[in-house]
Image (cartoon, rainbow, N blue to C red; front, side, top):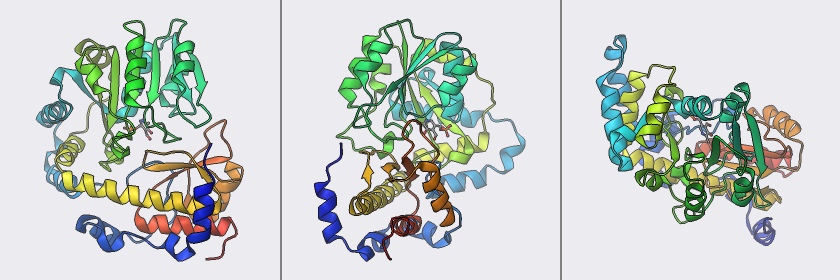
Amino acid sequence: MISLDRRRLLALSVTAPALTAPVITATLPVVLQAAERQRELRFPLRLSANENPWGPGPAARAALAASVDESCRYPGEVTNRLVAAIAAKENVAPDRILIGTGSAELLNMLALGYCMRGRLVSAWPTFNYVHAMAAKLEAEVVRVPVDQNLRHDLGAMAAAAKSPTGLIYVCNPNNPTGTVVPADALREFCRSFGERTLVAVDEAYLDFADPAATASVVDLVRADANVVVLRTFSKIHGLAGLRIGYAIARPDIIRKLRGLQLAIPNGPGHAAALASLGDADFLRTTRTALLADRARIVAACDALGIACSATQGNFLFMKTGLALEEFRAQMRNEKIEVGRPFEPLLDWCRITVGTSAETTAFITALRKIKGVRA
Ligand SMILES: Cc1ncc(COP(=O)(O)O)c(C=O)c1O
């Protein structure tokens, strides 16, 4: 599945200091250097939830601070402005956007609207939030194993969705594997179901992906396909605690989902999200830092003979050679929290890329667990 040649080469040529040195500190953009300086390593390190530790960015922080006075009010105008800004970014009309309390709320709404006593098809393992609600709604949940490269098996998923299916969930890049589906194959897959089955494409991590590897399928929404695209401010924007995600879909689908909304939105969060959308510097520099540190972890794994999936997210999925609970316990001894279990791959672990200092601490701990002296 994963070539060992590159790994062996690296094992011979990469020295321990090269692996653990924070390679980019000297060139880190000023905004990230400032955040890193302020952020002493705070143990336990949280490399477990795919957050972006560099956030919130400067513009979002300023907007949050400025909205404190408005926190006594129910949110209003700021939500309309956020919808308009998202619509402009996605090049769709505002009636194709629905903001949720995190994309998690939108996933619950999708389950309520499309899975009640019906059928859900997805890859497995994947982000299993919609599955939990679908199961509560007595849906049949069909889990289609990823292929040997830990990628979605679209052919097997299409075959599984031949029986009447309310919702197909595709996570691209996939959590926890980080693998992607090429955009053209995904578009063809989505279109093949016509009006029969709604396809939800969760693009939570798309901002980290190489544009040559995959792309958004939002163009299908512009073409009125039976597709919902999900995005979130929890990942590259570094605003996970503020709980803001959005759906992009045809107006009739948005109307149906809106009718199932339970939460009232968070006004200061919307102000921060609006500011973050315009903070191109922060988004670019945070992406650069996370991808550089992700590459450092991949190189460390290569040198240690640890296989990693071909990740395109701000996280890695690695075959540690230990049962997950044992690996988690050993990492906990090093004061590092790592990813939860993703059945059936229980000798693999998902690691979120942290700050550069956290990455160095993780690599040092990994080498120690693998018996390599510092
Ligand atoms: C693929 C995927 N979708 C959605 C979510 C939920 O994100 P939010 O914070 O927007 O609810 C996550 C969270 O980790 C995720 O991994």
